[in-house]
Image (cartoon, rainbow, N blue to C red; front, side):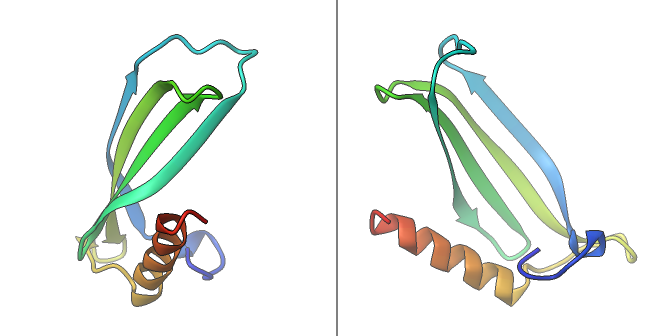
Length: 98
């Protein structure tokens, strides 16, 4: 994650995920899918997801809580500074309409 190579770089747990279907989604329909970080804590982050039709109608929404985790010690840990900085920079880009 954040530029670190290999499976050993994965240091988070998907602690919770929710999904809400608002409308039927058909296989042949083109969709707009988006994701953003809505909460950036010391040890966790929350990502929001949405799927809209091309006309802008919300079809699906969801959220996922990811907790940073040190597997060898079996303990949660703080977000890495580089990861925090990357998320903040990415979210600022899209806040400006980028």
